[in-house]
Image: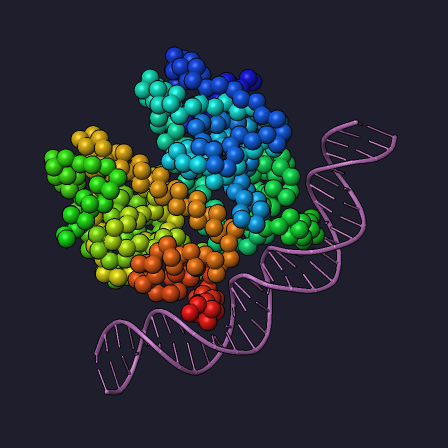
Length: 196
Length: 196
DNA sequence: ATAATAAATTAATGTACATTAAGAAAGTTA
DNA sequence: TAACTTTCTTAATGTACATTAATTTATTAT
């Protein structure tokens, strides 16, 4: 399946589109290739695009003042990724967004999206739902981080995002869960002795 | 200043309103009194209102499976409070929203808000910005929780939300910061010996 | 295939925080 | 004002996790 088909299929999971609307939407999106480790957004950029991962894997992370990375999102094909904060407020990004594998994103510029909203109103509904989804995911994560141990969070992550665990190095999963790679390693060891 | 004036003044911090729009907006909001400890939203309710705190103080919290409370938001007059997740998706709330002091909220029902969007289009912009603001605040908090110690978070909280610290019991501040009241107490003791 | 690099594991030690339990202080109600 | 309830503090003990550093395993590049 080509990138355009992947994108349309993703949008049509939430809203239905006529043939004309499909064409109009695709007309606003452009593919962008990313090499492994290439950055889509660097800290202090202002994010101007909504990015759909058509192929590959991408992460977003925050770097604290001690130079430690804290992963906010891990995404693979079929996911949207951005620094929504920066995009929505048009202020400098606080995060980095970086390709993990060689990837392709389908992206649409803010100004282009404004036009699309006028010509294809249902697109506005789609993006409103996407942004809501981002909020909801973040809230769930905040709660989990406050109320569960690293072991519990890892177990939940593994069942909920099986496909992600395969695609990202373990130290990134550790960072996403908010622990060091060493500690995640020991959690995994412990679980391995218990299971089976 | 009466409750209606407080509400209008809050909205006009983000968008400007004609006299006619002001009247139209106020017509959709109704005051709701809350006694101390009274609940505005209980877990498993579906949240149907946007709530503006016109007087008093209100908190929202999550209760984990061990019965421990985790505070998500502390708000006083001039703030909006809700279980946005539940409101936006119309699914059962995962949180409680409860008055801390005797309070008054000005609230608008979802269906009423839909009407307001049609008659006063600028109101839609206002609420979009509010929801964005909620997302942004949550993201900042997620980052802080991942990268700072409790002591650092407390110092930041104290300078950023001086008015809140006065109004809520210390154990709620502790919960908001993600620590036990005992530990916050010891952090405060330590800071007191250092400062001055 | 070999070397070079990146990622994962292991183990020892350290620390930020939780838990428990008790008492002191402050706030509320009769 | 006393009695009660809620909140805050103190101190002892315990634990989930971080840090450091060395070793092994896997991946990438020449």
